[in-house]
Amino acid sequence: MLLILYVGLWCSKKVKNSDDYFVASRSLGTLVIAATVCASILGGSAMIGRGGIMYSSGLVGIMLGLPYLIGMYIFSAMSGRIQAVGAKYKIKSIPELMEYRFGRKARLLIAGLISFAMMATVASQLAAFATVLRTVAGVSFEIGVWIALFIIVGYTSVSGLFGVVYTDVLQFIVLITSVYIILPILSVEKIGGLKVLFETVPAAHLEMNITPDIIGIIFTTLIFTFAGAEMWQRAFSSKSPKVAKHGMLIGNTVYAATIFITLILSFSAVVLLPNVVEVFGTADAALPALIVEVLPTGLLGFAISGIIAVIMSTADTYLLISTQTFVVDFMKPLMKRELSQKEELQYSRIFTVVGGIVAVVISLYVEGVYNVLMFAWTFYAASVGVPAVLALLWKGATSGGICSGTLAGFFGSIGWKLLGSPFGFSEVLVGTGLCIIFSVGVSLLQNKNKKYSRFPSC
Image (cartoon, rainbow, N blue to C red; front, side, top):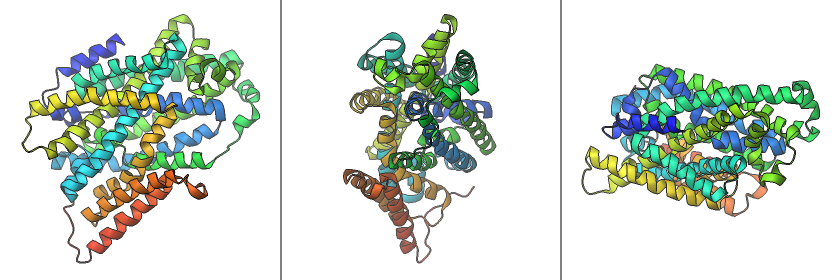
């Protein structure tokens, strides 16, 4: 933990302006991109939250990881163009792309949605951090959330993306070594081998029971990947289109392996620790409890550090995105005067603290790590996923189409949720469907004379 904080302070010396703070001067190489991409994906929601679902529901947990995997492979193919557009037109965020193509209204609309969604995603990581502390140290959930906030906000506010990505590399190494290599080997060995493990797990855990809620999560996750602001930021920060594409592919491939390793770990917890929910109050505690049960003292601290490190990795990523979006893409365009680079940096650091506190409030009032994540992602995926792709790839998209599609997706998904998701249809499906209809339909109506908006040629 001290080493991570040291790296953050060291990287703060590299931050001279907002480009350094938000896109690391577009200087990141392939291996750094791969490590930061994988570390960001493997946050508390992917590891603690999904591990809890696999512990309680079995194989269906894999279905929650595969959509993100598939979506990220598709996004990897897009990432080269994202980098090229960003470098050529000095664009460093989705809202900036929206303003370049469709004007200020589109930028402000998308920026508001991104800022809140990313802040709520930080809340899911704070909840995961607190769950780990409660499991291994007996710290109350509420105190754990505030401890997480202090650590994460501390180095994110001073070091920006430089600190985030280079601590990601360190965290990635610690996590993969301790949790995804050593822990499964020792867990399976303690049980007596993989054959014994799968013979001992309850039969219900080996069934793929897909409910309407699971279908909703699957589509939410898949659509979210196309507009995941954290991955767009990684693409914008890459040295070249080739680096962006290759780094994304490598990081995502490592993530693919961890999905199945998490299943092995969760099933090991089912066999060795069948009373996790009764003891800790939540299935989210399954993986931290397994670490305490299986690993010897020397490796225990290393593994816990690995889990906390990757949670921090994801939290700092989304906190930085929320800050960038609010300050650069929302507040700055509304101000009557230009902000200097120094002022922009100061406001960014202040909002990092404020945004972190808001994330604490969300994490304390929405129960469950995965519930917090889906709370953030559902309306975001329905309203921003399609417009982001159209802005990047479709010349025929118009301001009216994008704005109406975004609003239709947002209010459609919320309205459908308030109605109780009639007929078992997920709100993200309804919202995304409305978003597509309005985005494409209105754009086609406005483009009868083929007077297209500016389209980035790369």
